[in-house]
Image (cartoon, rainbow, N blue to C red; front, side):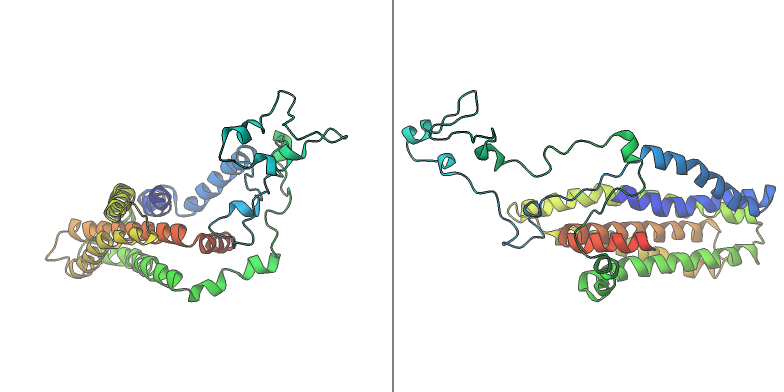
Length: 313
């Protein structure tokens, strides 16, 4: 999860470092030309090398989502029930032909004793490479299309989603705001930077994303395991929320520090607001990891719905 957020936010703050130089050297339209070239190269790789892996599995396997009525295991034959003495156990021995004592194959050759334990998709043949290239290869859910389409929107009233929006959305919003005013601050007085140096100012934000990734990646599982041991070996999804502590430290310090120092560049060196910008981005990455891990661990169905919303947007 930390690596995923690093790919999103780290990439967002690494590109301005290059775009400033590109704009100064060959012109701003080439920023979009390079994006088009990159997408053109990635499309055939995505089409030929990334097959669909989704599938519909049996409802009784979804123990964290299904109700007690859905979780119905195949009924065991009486000859497979465990008995308290060895004599009863020996009476259910199976020979090499697949026949058990007191059990005969049907005339058709099918063995109902073994068939009752075979999953419905156990013998489904694997798709060939050409079949995996099909753009549409069937539905991956038995639920209504419109239900899946509209499911994410009521979730905005869910307390967990509201908390995730506050944790991620607020910090992301302030990060975007800093990116908007950064050019105006450094291009104007007293620094009068050009677009190249202004682009290089995003180095602090990129390093902050990397540092946030390292902190979140190092603390996410360690803190959850530590608190699980202290809780008598019982894991709770709320253990993921502990990451908001470093987010509070880095995010708030970076946000207030950038605002104070960028407004008084005569008194502070330009590296100071750049460093605070990096701290704010690091806190944003940590908070995004905390919210994402908690949603995934505590509310898997909500996480699936948010994934649907993410694909729509």
